[in-house]
Image (cartoon, rainbow, N blue to C red; front, side, top):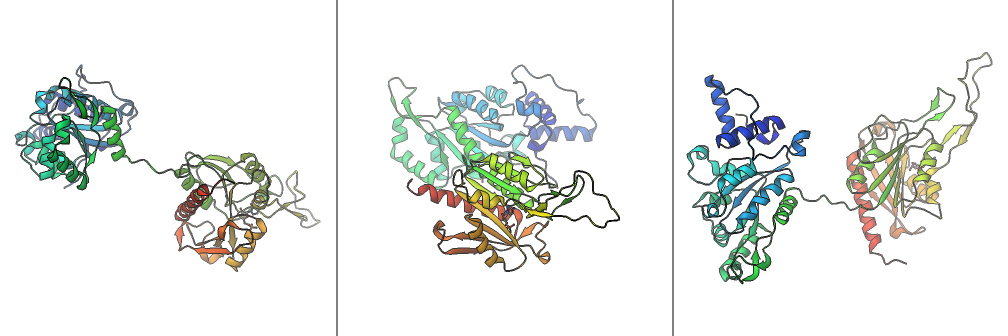
Length: 483
Ligand code: C5P
Protein backbone atom coordinates (compact mmCIF):
# COMPACT_ATOMS: atom_id res chain seq x y z
CA UNK A 1 0.00 0.00 0.00
CA UNK A 2 1.40 3.42 -0.92
CA UNK A 3 2.21 5.81 1.92
CA UNK A 4 1.69 9.56 1.93
CA UNK A 5 4.29 12.02 3.19
CA UNK A 6 2.54 15.14 4.47
CA UNK A 7 5.76 17.15 4.19
CA UNK A 8 5.80 16.63 0.42
CA UNK A 9 2.30 17.98 -0.20
CA UNK A 10 1.74 21.38 -1.82
CA UNK A 11 2.21 24.26 0.60
CA UNK A 12 -1.40 25.47 0.30
CA UNK A 13 -2.73 21.91 0.88
CA UNK A 14 -0.53 21.65 3.96
CA UNK A 15 -1.67 25.03 5.28
CA UNK A 16 -5.29 23.95 4.80
CA UNK A 17 -4.63 20.65 6.59
CA UNK A 18 -2.80 22.36 9.46
CA UNK A 19 -5.59 24.87 10.02
CA UNK A 20 -8.30 22.24 9.78
CA UNK A 21 -6.47 19.79 12.10
CA UNK A 22 -5.71 22.57 14.64
CA UNK A 23 -9.40 23.55 14.60
CA UNK A 24 -10.50 19.94 15.13
CA UNK A 25 -7.66 19.25 17.58
CA UNK A 26 -6.45 16.29 15.57
CA UNK A 27 -3.03 15.47 14.13
CA UNK A 28 -2.55 16.31 10.46
CA UNK A 29 -2.39 12.59 9.62
CA UNK A 30 -5.63 11.93 11.46
CA UNK A 31 -7.24 14.85 9.66
CA UNK A 32 -6.24 13.33 6.30
CA UNK A 33 -7.82 10.03 7.36
CA UNK A 34 -11.01 11.81 8.43
CA UNK A 35 -11.17 13.69 5.11
CA UNK A 36 -10.74 10.46 3.15
CA UNK A 37 -13.35 8.66 5.28
CA UNK A 38 -15.81 11.53 4.81
CA UNK A 39 -15.18 11.55 1.06
CA UNK A 40 -15.90 7.83 0.81
CA UNK A 41 -19.00 8.18 2.98
CA UNK A 42 -20.13 11.14 0.86
CA UNK A 43 -20.33 13.68 3.68
CA UNK A 44 -17.16 15.69 3.25
CA UNK A 45 -16.86 19.19 4.65
CA UNK A 46 -16.80 21.73 1.83
CA UNK A 47 -13.17 22.44 0.89
CA UNK A 48 -13.53 26.19 1.28
CA UNK A 49 -10.56 28.00 2.73
CA UNK A 50 -10.77 28.24 6.51
CA UNK A 51 -10.32 31.57 8.20
CA UNK A 52 -7.02 31.50 10.05
CA UNK A 53 -7.56 31.50 13.83
CA UNK A 54 -6.19 34.69 15.40
CA UNK A 55 -3.23 32.90 16.99
CA UNK A 56 -2.02 31.45 13.70
CA UNK A 57 1.04 33.31 12.44
CA UNK A 58 0.98 34.66 8.89
CA UNK A 59 2.52 32.41 6.26
CA UNK A 60 6.29 32.33 6.43
CA UNK A 61 8.46 33.33 3.47
CA UNK A 62 8.97 29.67 2.60
CA UNK A 63 5.21 29.07 2.69
CA UNK A 64 4.56 32.08 0.46
CA UNK A 65 7.17 30.98 -2.05
CA UNK A 66 5.91 27.39 -1.89
CA UNK A 67 9.33 26.09 -0.78
CA UNK A 68 9.02 22.80 1.10
CA UNK A 69 10.04 22.60 4.74
CA UNK A 70 13.24 20.64 4.76
CA UNK A 71 13.09 18.85 8.08
CA UNK A 72 10.86 17.86 10.95
CA UNK A 73 11.43 17.51 14.65
CA UNK A 74 9.51 15.75 17.42
CA UNK A 75 10.00 18.05 20.41
CA UNK A 76 9.56 16.40 23.80
CA UNK A 77 8.95 18.96 26.51
CA UNK A 78 9.92 17.67 29.93
CA UNK A 79 8.66 18.90 33.29
CA UNK A 80 10.82 21.76 34.47
CA UNK A 81 10.61 25.50 34.88
CA UNK A 82 12.71 25.81 31.68
CA UNK A 83 9.69 24.46 29.73
CA UNK A 84 8.66 28.06 29.10
CA UNK A 85 11.76 28.45 26.89
CA UNK A 86 10.51 25.58 24.74
CA UNK A 87 7.66 27.78 23.52
CA UNK A 88 10.30 30.08 22.04
CA UNK A 89 12.19 27.03 20.77
CA UNK A 90 9.14 26.03 18.67
CA UNK A 91 9.24 29.45 16.98
CA UNK A 92 13.01 29.29 16.47
CA UNK A 93 12.78 25.87 14.83
CA UNK A 94 9.92 26.95 12.57
CA UNK A 95 11.89 30.05 11.52
CA UNK A 96 14.51 27.61 10.23
CA UNK A 97 11.90 25.78 8.13
CA UNK A 98 11.77 22.87 10.58
CA UNK A 99 8.33 21.42 11.29
CA UNK A 100 7.69 20.72 14.97
CA UNK A 101 5.40 18.17 16.56
CA UNK A 102 5.27 18.41 20.33
CA UNK A 103 4.92 15.87 23.10
CA UNK A 104 4.35 17.05 26.67
CA UNK A 105 5.13 14.89 29.68
CA UNK A 106 2.64 14.93 32.53
CA UNK A 107 4.97 17.15 34.57
CA UNK A 108 5.52 19.52 31.61
CA UNK A 109 1.79 20.30 31.64
CA UNK A 110 2.30 21.92 35.06
CA UNK A 111 4.50 24.52 33.36
CA UNK A 112 3.07 25.00 29.85
CA UNK A 113 -0.35 24.16 28.47
CA UNK A 114 -1.01 21.91 25.48
CA UNK A 115 -3.12 24.75 24.03
CA UNK A 116 -0.19 27.20 23.96
CA UNK A 117 2.10 24.57 22.45
CA UNK A 118 -0.51 23.65 19.84
CA UNK A 119 -1.08 27.27 18.90
CA UNK A 120 2.63 27.82 18.33
CA UNK A 121 3.36 24.56 16.54
CA UNK A 122 0.10 24.62 14.51
CA UNK A 123 -0.14 20.91 15.26
CA UNK A 124 -2.00 18.72 17.66
CA UNK A 125 -0.05 18.14 20.88
CA UNK A 126 0.56 14.63 22.21
CA UNK A 127 0.40 13.82 25.91
CA UNK A 128 -0.84 10.25 26.39
CA UNK A 129 0.68 6.89 25.61
CA UNK A 130 -2.77 5.37 25.55
CA UNK A 131 -4.55 8.09 23.59
CA UNK A 132 -7.27 6.23 21.63
CA UNK A 133 -7.19 8.86 18.88
CA UNK A 134 -3.53 8.47 18.00
CA UNK A 135 -2.79 4.99 19.37
CA UNK A 136 -5.00 3.03 16.94
CA UNK A 137 -2.04 2.93 14.58
CA UNK A 138 0.74 3.09 17.17
CA UNK A 139 1.04 6.87 17.50
CA UNK A 140 4.17 6.72 19.61
CA UNK A 141 5.92 4.78 16.86
CA UNK A 142 4.95 7.43 14.32
CA UNK A 143 6.10 10.23 16.61
CA UNK A 144 9.37 8.35 17.11
CA UNK A 145 10.06 7.70 13.44
CA UNK A 146 8.10 10.17 11.31
CA UNK A 147 10.61 12.93 11.97
CA UNK A 148 14.27 13.65 11.26
CA UNK A 149 15.34 14.43 14.82
CA UNK A 150 13.99 14.19 18.37
CA UNK A 151 14.74 17.14 20.64
CA UNK A 152 14.14 16.87 24.40
CA UNK A 153 13.94 20.31 26.01
CA UNK A 154 14.03 20.56 28.92
CA UNK A 155 15.61 17.15 29.45
CA UNK A 156 15.04 16.56 33.15
CA UNK A 157 17.18 14.31 35.34
CA UNK A 158 14.23 11.92 35.52
CA UNK A 159 13.75 11.72 31.74
CA UNK A 160 17.46 11.12 31.22
CA UNK A 161 17.48 8.40 33.88
CA UNK A 162 14.54 6.70 32.12
CA UNK A 163 16.34 6.92 28.77
CA UNK A 164 19.60 5.57 30.18
CA UNK A 165 17.76 2.56 31.59
CA UNK A 166 15.33 1.94 28.73
CA UNK A 167 12.08 2.73 30.54
CA UNK A 168 8.94 3.25 28.45
CA UNK A 169 6.13 3.92 30.93
CA UNK A 170 4.83 7.15 29.36
CA UNK A 171 4.58 8.62 25.85
CA UNK A 172 7.88 10.58 26.00
CA UNK A 173 10.01 7.66 27.22
CA UNK A 174 8.25 5.22 24.84
CA UNK A 175 9.09 7.51 21.88
CA UNK A 176 12.70 7.83 23.01
CA UNK A 177 13.00 4.04 23.27
CA UNK A 178 11.22 3.35 19.95
CA UNK A 179 13.10 5.83 17.81
CA UNK A 180 15.80 5.18 15.26
CA UNK A 181 16.40 8.93 14.80
CA UNK A 182 19.15 11.09 16.28
CA UNK A 183 18.29 12.54 19.71
CA UNK A 184 19.33 15.97 21.04
CA UNK A 185 18.95 16.62 24.76
CA UNK A 186 18.89 20.08 26.34
CA UNK A 187 19.28 19.25 30.04
CA UNK A 188 17.90 21.58 32.68
CA UNK A 189 18.03 20.97 36.39
CA UNK A 190 19.36 22.19 39.71
CA UNK A 191 23.22 22.15 39.80
CA UNK A 192 23.19 19.58 42.63
CA UNK A 193 21.05 17.24 40.52
CA UNK A 194 23.32 17.80 37.48
CA UNK A 195 26.41 17.00 39.56
CA UNK A 196 24.83 14.04 41.33
CA UNK A 197 26.73 10.80 40.69
CA UNK A 198 23.69 9.06 39.21
CA UNK A 199 23.03 11.90 36.74
CA UNK A 200 26.72 11.88 35.77
CA UNK A 201 26.50 8.11 35.12
CA UNK A 202 23.31 8.50 33.10
CA UNK A 203 24.73 11.35 30.99
CA UNK A 204 27.90 9.35 30.29
CA UNK A 205 25.79 6.33 29.28
CA UNK A 206 23.59 8.42 26.97
CA UNK A 207 26.65 9.95 25.30
CA UNK A 208 28.05 6.45 24.74
CA UNK A 209 24.69 5.57 23.17
CA UNK A 210 25.20 8.37 20.62
CA UNK A 211 22.78 10.91 22.10
CA UNK A 212 23.78 14.56 21.47
CA UNK A 213 23.70 17.16 24.25
CA UNK A 214 23.49 20.94 24.23
CA UNK A 215 24.26 22.66 27.53
CA UNK A 216 23.41 22.98 30.30
CA UNK A 217 24.80 26.47 30.82
CA UNK A 218 26.05 28.02 34.04
CA UNK A 219 23.92 30.70 35.64
CA UNK A 220 21.35 31.57 38.23
CA UNK A 221 18.70 28.99 39.03
CA UNK A 222 14.99 29.54 39.46
CA UNK A 223 15.52 28.67 43.13
CA UNK A 224 16.38 31.92 44.90
CA UNK A 225 20.08 32.37 45.59
CA UNK A 226 21.23 29.22 43.78
CA UNK A 227 23.68 29.30 40.88
CA UNK A 228 25.84 26.83 38.97
CA UNK A 229 25.70 24.56 35.92
CA UNK A 230 22.16 23.44 35.14
CA UNK A 231 20.39 26.22 33.22
CA UNK A 232 18.86 25.02 29.98
CA UNK A 233 20.54 26.46 26.85
CA UNK A 234 18.72 29.34 25.22
CA UNK A 235 16.17 28.53 22.52
CA UNK A 236 18.41 29.93 19.75
CA UNK A 237 21.31 27.75 20.90
CA UNK A 238 19.13 24.62 20.90
CA UNK A 239 17.64 25.47 17.49
CA UNK A 240 21.13 26.02 16.06
CA UNK A 241 22.31 22.69 17.51
CA UNK A 242 19.25 20.96 16.02
CA UNK A 243 19.95 22.55 12.66
CA UNK A 244 23.59 21.40 12.76
CA UNK A 245 22.38 17.82 13.29
CA UNK A 246 19.68 18.09 10.63
CA UNK A 247 21.78 19.92 8.06
CA UNK A 248 25.43 19.29 8.85
CA UNK A 249 27.59 22.06 7.39
CA UNK A 250 28.97 21.11 3.97
CA UNK A 251 32.78 21.16 4.04
CA UNK A 252 34.14 24.05 1.93
CA UNK A 253 37.88 23.34 1.81
CA UNK A 254 38.47 25.82 -1.04
CA UNK A 255 36.62 28.70 0.62
CA UNK A 256 38.51 31.93 -0.03
CA UNK A 257 40.34 30.49 -3.07
CA UNK A 258 39.87 31.78 -6.61
CA UNK A 259 39.92 29.08 -9.28
CA UNK A 260 40.16 29.83 -13.00
CA UNK A 261 39.10 27.13 -15.46
CA UNK A 262 39.10 27.07 -19.26
CA UNK A 263 36.76 24.71 -21.08
CA UNK A 264 35.40 23.72 -24.46
CA UNK A 265 36.79 24.22 -27.95
CA UNK A 266 37.75 27.48 -29.59
CA UNK A 267 36.34 28.59 -32.92
CA UNK A 268 38.90 30.19 -35.21
CA UNK A 269 37.20 32.23 -37.93
CA UNK A 270 37.94 31.66 -41.63
CA UNK A 271 35.44 34.29 -42.72
CA UNK A 272 32.29 35.74 -41.07
CA UNK A 273 30.38 32.44 -41.43
CA UNK A 274 33.02 29.68 -41.34
CA UNK A 275 35.43 28.60 -38.65
CA UNK A 276 37.93 25.92 -37.63
CA UNK A 277 36.85 23.96 -34.56
CA UNK A 278 37.34 20.66 -32.76
CA UNK A 279 35.06 18.08 -31.11
CA UNK A 280 35.51 19.19 -27.47
CA UNK A 281 32.14 19.30 -25.64
CA UNK A 282 33.38 21.26 -22.62
CA UNK A 283 31.85 18.65 -20.28
CA UNK A 284 35.08 17.93 -18.39
CA UNK A 285 35.92 21.60 -17.78
CA UNK A 286 32.34 22.38 -16.71
CA UNK A 287 32.35 19.39 -14.32
CA UNK A 288 35.59 20.71 -12.77
CA UNK A 289 33.99 24.15 -12.35
CA UNK A 290 31.00 22.56 -10.56
CA UNK A 291 33.29 20.50 -8.27
CA UNK A 292 35.47 23.52 -7.42
CA UNK A 293 32.39 25.63 -6.67
CA UNK A 294 30.97 22.86 -4.46
CA UNK A 295 34.28 22.86 -2.55
CA UNK A 296 33.67 26.53 -1.75
CA UNK A 297 35.94 28.19 -4.31
CA UNK A 298 35.12 31.34 -6.23
CA UNK A 299 35.15 29.98 -9.79
CA UNK A 300 35.71 31.81 -13.07
CA UNK A 301 35.02 29.63 -16.10
CA UNK A 302 36.26 30.87 -19.47
CA UNK A 303 34.45 28.77 -22.02
CA UNK A 304 34.57 28.39 -25.75
CA UNK A 305 31.31 27.71 -27.64
CA UNK A 306 29.56 24.75 -25.98
CA UNK A 307 26.05 23.38 -25.69
CA UNK A 308 25.97 23.37 -21.87
CA UNK A 309 24.12 25.47 -19.28
CA UNK A 310 26.20 27.83 -17.16
CA UNK A 311 26.76 26.13 -13.77
CA UNK A 312 25.04 27.85 -10.81
CA UNK A 313 27.27 30.06 -8.71
CA UNK A 314 30.07 30.17 -11.27
CA UNK A 315 31.14 33.29 -13.20
CA UNK A 316 31.15 32.22 -16.85
CA UNK A 317 32.90 34.21 -19.56
CA UNK A 318 31.89 33.09 -23.03
CA UNK A 319 34.49 33.42 -25.78
CA UNK A 320 34.95 32.21 -29.34
CA UNK A 321 38.62 32.26 -30.25
CA UNK A 322 41.91 31.39 -28.52
CA UNK A 323 42.94 35.03 -28.45
CA UNK A 324 39.70 36.03 -26.70
CA UNK A 325 40.20 33.14 -24.26
CA UNK A 326 43.72 34.38 -23.42
CA UNK A 327 42.44 37.92 -22.91
CA UNK A 328 39.77 36.77 -20.43
CA UNK A 329 42.20 34.46 -18.64
CA UNK A 330 44.68 37.31 -18.21
CA UNK A 331 42.03 39.73 -16.99
CA UNK A 332 40.86 37.15 -14.40
CA UNK A 333 44.26 37.01 -12.68
CA UNK A 334 45.32 36.78 -9.93
CA UNK A 335 43.93 33.37 -9.03
CA UNK A 336 45.10 30.66 -6.63
CA UNK A 337 44.55 27.74 -8.99
CA UNK A 338 44.29 27.68 -12.80
CA UNK A 339 43.01 24.62 -14.64
CA UNK A 340 43.29 24.66 -18.44
CA UNK A 341 40.86 22.05 -19.70
CA UNK A 342 39.97 23.82 -22.96
CA UNK A 343 40.86 22.22 -26.28
CA UNK A 344 42.37 25.38 -27.70
CA UNK A 345 42.97 25.42 -31.45
CA UNK A 346 46.70 25.41 -32.11
CA UNK A 347 46.32 27.48 -35.28
CA UNK A 348 44.12 30.18 -36.63
CA UNK A 349 43.68 31.52 -40.13
CA UNK A 350 46.12 34.35 -40.83
CA UNK A 351 44.17 35.86 -43.68
CA UNK A 352 40.66 35.86 -42.15
CA UNK A 353 38.22 36.99 -44.82
CA UNK A 354 36.22 40.10 -44.04
CA UNK A 355 33.47 38.87 -46.38
CA UNK A 356 32.23 35.34 -47.02
CA UNK A 357 34.76 33.62 -49.29
CA UNK A 358 33.29 32.93 -52.76
CA UNK A 359 33.82 29.94 -55.00
CA UNK A 360 35.71 31.20 -58.01
CA UNK A 361 37.15 29.67 -61.14
CA UNK A 362 40.58 30.32 -59.61
CA UNK A 363 40.05 27.22 -57.44
CA UNK A 364 40.26 26.85 -53.65
CA UNK A 365 41.33 29.96 -51.72
CA UNK A 366 44.62 29.34 -49.89
CA UNK A 367 44.26 29.28 -46.10
CA UNK A 368 47.35 30.57 -44.34
CA UNK A 369 47.58 29.32 -40.75
CA UNK A 370 49.44 31.01 -37.90
CA UNK A 371 50.05 29.67 -34.44
CA UNK A 372 47.68 30.68 -31.64
CA UNK A 373 49.02 31.89 -28.32
CA UNK A 374 49.55 28.99 -25.93
CA UNK A 375 47.45 30.07 -22.97
CA UNK A 376 48.70 27.37 -20.57
CA UNK A 377 52.38 28.08 -21.35
CA UNK A 378 51.86 31.85 -21.20
CA UNK A 379 50.30 31.71 -17.74
CA UNK A 380 52.70 29.03 -16.43
CA UNK A 381 55.69 31.16 -17.37
CA UNK A 382 54.47 34.42 -15.86
CA UNK A 383 56.85 35.85 -13.31
CA UNK A 384 54.24 38.17 -11.87
CA UNK A 385 50.78 36.81 -11.00
CA UNK A 386 51.63 33.17 -11.85
CA UNK A 387 48.98 31.13 -10.03
CA UNK A 388 50.57 28.95 -7.31
CA UNK A 389 49.04 25.84 -8.91
CA UNK A 390 48.69 25.54 -12.70
CA UNK A 391 47.14 22.42 -14.19
CA UNK A 392 47.06 21.57 -17.90
CA UNK A 393 45.35 18.82 -19.83
CA UNK A 394 46.96 16.62 -22.46
CA UNK A 395 44.63 15.05 -24.94
CA UNK A 396 46.69 12.47 -26.80
CA UNK A 397 46.00 9.74 -29.29
CA UNK A 398 49.36 7.94 -28.84
CA UNK A 399 52.31 7.69 -26.39
CA UNK A 400 50.03 9.24 -23.79
CA UNK A 401 52.29 9.26 -20.72
CA UNK A 402 55.53 10.19 -22.54
CA UNK A 403 53.89 13.01 -24.44
CA UNK A 404 52.23 14.28 -21.27
CA UNK A 405 55.53 14.22 -19.36
CA UNK A 406 57.28 16.27 -22.03
CA UNK A 407 54.30 18.64 -22.14
CA UNK A 408 54.66 19.22 -18.39
CA UNK A 409 58.26 20.33 -18.92
CA UNK A 410 57.59 22.30 -22.10
CA UNK A 411 54.60 24.23 -20.80
CA UNK A 412 55.98 24.83 -17.31
CA UNK A 413 52.78 23.87 -15.49
CA UNK A 414 52.65 21.91 -12.21
CA UNK A 415 50.34 19.03 -13.14
CA UNK A 416 49.08 17.53 -16.38
CA UNK A 417 45.88 15.54 -16.58
CA UNK A 418 46.55 13.20 -19.49
CA UNK A 419 43.71 11.52 -21.32
CA UNK A 420 43.56 9.25 -24.33
CA UNK A 421 41.26 10.80 -26.90
CA UNK A 422 41.72 8.28 -29.69
CA UNK A 423 38.30 7.76 -31.35
CA UNK A 424 37.91 4.24 -29.88
CA UNK A 425 37.82 5.67 -26.32
CA UNK A 426 34.78 7.88 -27.02
CA UNK A 427 36.23 10.51 -24.62
CA UNK A 428 35.70 13.48 -26.97
CA UNK A 429 32.06 14.43 -26.47
CA UNK A 430 31.43 11.35 -24.29
CA UNK A 431 30.62 11.14 -20.58
CA UNK A 432 33.52 9.02 -19.34
CA UNK A 433 37.23 9.57 -19.12
CA UNK A 434 40.36 7.59 -18.23
CA UNK A 435 43.06 9.89 -16.97
CA UNK A 436 46.55 9.90 -15.52
CA UNK A 437 47.64 12.68 -13.22
CA UNK A 438 51.22 13.60 -13.97
CA UNK A 439 52.99 15.85 -11.49
CA UNK A 440 56.42 16.87 -10.39
CA UNK A 441 57.38 15.06 -7.19
CA UNK A 442 57.96 17.62 -4.45
CA UNK A 443 56.95 20.32 -6.94
CA UNK A 444 60.57 20.48 -8.21
CA UNK A 445 61.20 21.58 -11.79
CA UNK A 446 63.93 19.06 -12.48
CA UNK A 447 62.77 16.50 -9.94
CA UNK A 448 61.18 13.10 -10.49
CA UNK A 449 57.80 12.89 -12.17
CA UNK A 450 54.92 11.00 -10.59
CA UNK A 451 52.22 9.25 -12.62
CA UNK A 452 48.95 8.47 -10.90
CA UNK A 453 46.60 6.42 -13.12
CA UNK A 454 42.92 6.56 -12.27
CA UNK A 455 40.31 3.97 -13.28
CA UNK A 456 37.63 4.73 -15.87
CA UNK A 457 35.32 7.32 -14.36
CA UNK A 458 32.57 9.67 -15.39
CA UNK A 459 33.74 13.19 -16.13
CA UNK A 460 32.04 14.32 -12.88
CA UNK A 461 34.04 11.73 -10.90
CA UNK A 462 37.27 12.83 -12.60
CA UNK A 463 36.40 16.42 -11.64
CA UNK A 464 35.69 15.47 -8.00
CA UNK A 465 38.93 13.49 -7.79
CA UNK A 466 40.96 16.29 -9.35
CA UNK A 467 39.51 18.85 -6.94
CA UNK A 468 40.23 16.47 -4.02
CA UNK A 469 43.90 16.43 -5.13
CA UNK A 470 43.84 20.24 -5.40
CA UNK A 471 42.40 20.50 -1.87
CA UNK A 472 45.15 18.23 -0.54
CA UNK A 473 47.85 20.22 -2.30
CA UNK A 474 46.46 23.52 -0.99
CA UNK A 475 46.34 22.07 2.55
CA UNK A 476 49.91 20.71 2.28
CA UNK A 477 51.21 24.03 0.98
CA UNK A 478 49.49 26.00 3.70
CA UNK A 479 51.39 23.90 6.25
CA UNK A 480 54.72 25.00 4.77
CA UNK A 481 56.28 27.91 6.65
CA UNK A 482 55.98 31.15 4.68
CA UNK A 483 59.38 32.02 3.16
O1 C5P B 1 49.63 21.51 -26.67
P1 C5P B 1 48.37 20.83 -26.31
O2 C5P B 1 47.18 21.38 -26.97
O3 C5P B 1 48.38 19.34 -26.39
O4 C5P B 1 48.25 21.12 -24.72
C1 C5P B 1 47.10 20.89 -24.02
C2 C5P B 1 47.02 21.80 -22.85
O5 C5P B 1 47.43 23.10 -23.21
C3 C5P B 1 45.59 21.96 -22.38
O6 C5P B 1 45.64 22.20 -21.00
C4 C5P B 1 45.12 23.16 -23.14
O7 C5P B 1 44.06 23.81 -22.48
C5 C5P B 1 46.35 24.02 -23.18
N1 C5P B 1 46.47 24.85 -24.36
C6 C5P B 1 46.36 26.21 -24.24
N2 C5P B 1 46.53 27.01 -25.32
C7 C5P B 1 46.80 26.50 -26.52
C8 C5P B 1 46.91 25.11 -26.67
C9 C5P B 1 46.73 24.31 -25.57
O8 C5P B 1 46.09 26.69 -23.14
N3 C5P B 1 46.94 27.29 -27.55
